[in-house]
Amino acid sequence: MSTTDEIPAAAPDDAAPVIADRYRLLERIGHGGMAEVFRAQDQSLGRDVALKIFRRELASAEDLRRQEVEVRLLAGLSHPSLVTLFDATSDGDGRGVLVLEYVKGSDARDRLKDGPLPGPVVAAIGLDIANALAYIHSQGVVHRDISPANILLPDSLSTGVAAKLTDLGIARLVDDTKITATGSVMGTASYMSPEQALGRPLTGRSDVYSLGLVLLECLTGRREFPGTVAESAAARLTRDPAVPSTLDRRWDALLVSMTAREPEQRPSAEAVATQLRALLDQDAWVGSIPDPADLPTARMDPPTAPVTAGTGPTRLLPAPVGEDAPATGPTRVLPASEQEDASATVPLTERAAPAPAAERPVRRPSRRRILDLALAVDALVAVIAIILAGVTLSTADHSVPDPVPTYPAVDGTLGDHLKQLEDQVSRDWTP
Image (tube, rainbow, N blue to C red; front, side, top):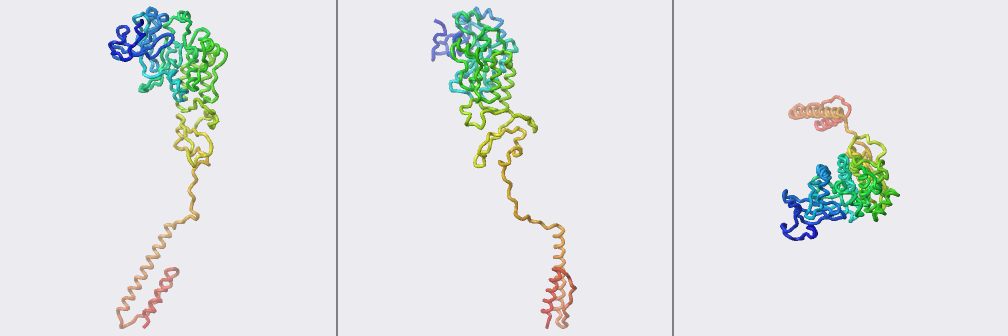
């Protein structure tokens, strides 16, 4: 019986099998046609690791020892979106064992069981995997098995990575002749490139094709080439993947180019990463649309004219909501540099009506007119004071009544007041 056939579910740590006198098996976390994967504890360093234990007929301990150069090459690769290879060893049955970085989380295959993923999530996953592929391709390594099961999605984003690529370089460590002899095919059948299905030499563009199929499935929730190995291989050799017209045209163009049947017509992994980064920066998400009739348009086209009011990422300006909202019309898009002055680009029918002006404007008197009026009032007050003073003196001396004085003729309002004063004095003075 193999040491990994049964792992106690609730046994104490010292009862669990130990691989290579160092790695204590804790739980089985995956299995496939080539190997089983376990979470284990590295007792020397006190950390969790993932052990990939191969079937003996595919990769024995002796096979891995012969591939020492390849193991060192793969162990020397380091990238945030790559699952790191720490070591290669064997178990007690002579099976080859790879010691890998343990990533707590799920994989894209499990996530797709719940249906399509949102566009931003797909772009973030694709960007990380494309960056990882660009790195390993620059080191002369082709992955050869890009599939949802080999894309790990960490529970924590503290490292700033949305996805990690695992099973790196398995094809370089496992003898292809042994795989053929057992009736297996290197790589997951549904995601192999046409040249891989034909057994031709592979380049990094083969990984790009496989990643294109994975991204398409993430957006639609549908595997493009299902079926047996023969059925899947025959389908991709006779037709291109069907990219739904309900996807945003930028997704459409990218996926069509990535899954071109001829390798030289596909973009490099670095170019794919650049385009996915642009999608993220623009916040242009449509993803898989179940009913295009529910949207103003089925696609969102990029602007045809350059923005002249500055640079920067495009941000979405939502249409008005409520009673003031227009009856129809999609969300408007404004450059970030113009968002503060959004009213300059809003149609006149959506702008607020100006406040009504007064029916007749009020004209304020000029400063000169105010000064003239003040001087006239001061003069009137002075004249009245003089007259009252004279009347008081004259009435104080009752022996000789004074005649009624005659005042100079003065035009205007002042003259009218003097005339009234003269009449009043005359009446009061008359014996």
